[in-house]
View 1 (cartoon, one colour):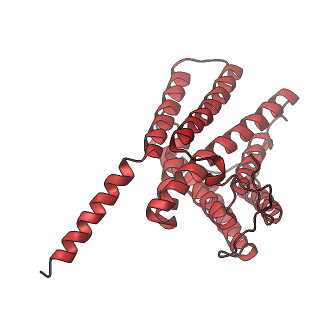
View 2: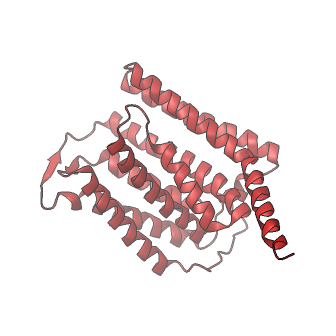
View 3: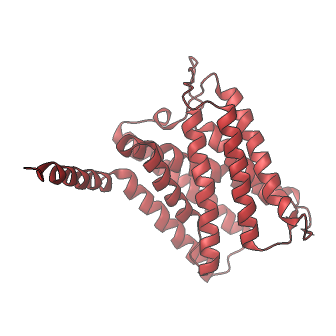
Length: 273
């Protein structure tokens, strides 16, 4: 009789795991991950022009969103359930997210070269700048809608926020990494970098209760990374160290500026998409 409770717990854990594995968002993620890696492999095998690569990337991102819309219609859900809200406090949260993104970008772009110097590249042309902003906007909207909005929200309902944050961030890190050409050293650096950013974005979404904030943060750091013609002369793992320093500072300031249990009040028009 003393062993019955432990047997029941194990059975419940196995049932919960099986329930998670049956969720549509996992199938959706596997499709997104596999298709992205297949396209990256195709680009690696054949030297397509840069503009064609950008066009294909934008089309694929739009296709992911359209597929997600069809999936949500089948589930009888909507974007509002996954963070597309406009609470009154979001105006303040949006400014905080922008400032934290600028802080992160300053630390990761300029700080690594303080003692070693900088490489200065030609400034991007108008067309290159426009494409960079377009790619950053599309990437931030798509990835945050899929990972923080759709996947993290569903996982939070199933297993709570800490587990959802970890799983979603790992998914995001693997999604962001390009398998080909594979380099183990580069793999760990890129995965750890994306994992750290994913965790911060997940916490930012959890605290602000609106997807607008992680979208602003991710869009800003991507844009500054693509357009800033200055790079510190340093190793990849030194860059990774400064990325973690930047995320630690941003997390500290986030915890000070936004109270965890603060519940945002919605306006009458609470959706921004």
